[in-house]
Image (cartoon, rainbow, N blue to C red):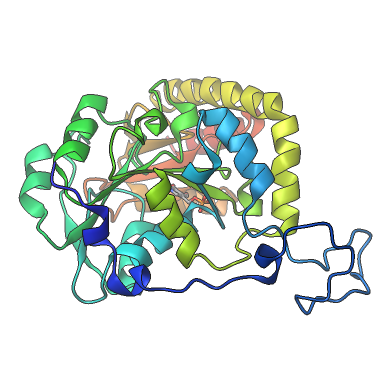
Length: 349
Ligand SMILES: Cc1ncc(COP(=O)(O)O)c(C=O)c1O
């Protein structure tokens, strides 16, 4: 493989003198902090949040490192994995010059982030059975293709891609391959985290928003080799993860078994939902899912979407998305939520 990290990083990022936050410069046992223009009088709350949070999220990284058998320097903690996606553009893509490759239908933020950062978007659409199209990917990328996004399990199709196929792509691609594992905890497939030191161009995204049930905190991860993570740390805003979020994530690690239990329940509800949905005459097909949602091909997505809205149930209308005509994406809810959904759909058929 022809990959040289230094060759693909933007010059301005290479030359950047990163912002040095007050808290980062200090190390020692001081007791009076008059360095960061905080309010020493405290917060109008039961708990004080008057101090800036740890810019390095040291404690969270220790926990994540243990979980994935990584070093803290191989972990970036972001304000959602959406922040990691945006930073990838800022690190690697020269506006108006570079491009990125996506495999639609897939998660919409790759394209939105590309547009915000003025990077061109190339597409290697999935095949009709939602598999990666290796030849199309190979044909699309050129020397200005800096990023290739592979979402597995994929949103909105719900399937995981073949592991060997993904590794074959990582192997030949001269830019950064991002494997977005937002839904990996709902899948029987193995994570690619263990591969980050086998491939110098591999970045894994994970999030606390799905299996961990912490979407409101906005915390996501990028996992990669030390050199790539150093670039994330160089360009990130200094205090990108709030104190409340950091504290809550650490508490969640103490209750990890609760999150694990919810994953088991979601998977079993997913299978029940698929079985029930398949019985409705307005449902043409329920695609197999490795995620916490199912993609459902219906006879009339617009009509069913509006009908469900009138029943006060919101699902995601994917009718206008490539390869998803007639499709609704439905998140797996609790037993009661799913029962309400099924009852509503039964009124239609
Ligand atoms: C594939 C995928 N990646 C990333 C995200 C964003 O995750 P976060 O909440 O960590 O920003 C989502 C959210 O739906 C997603 O579907």
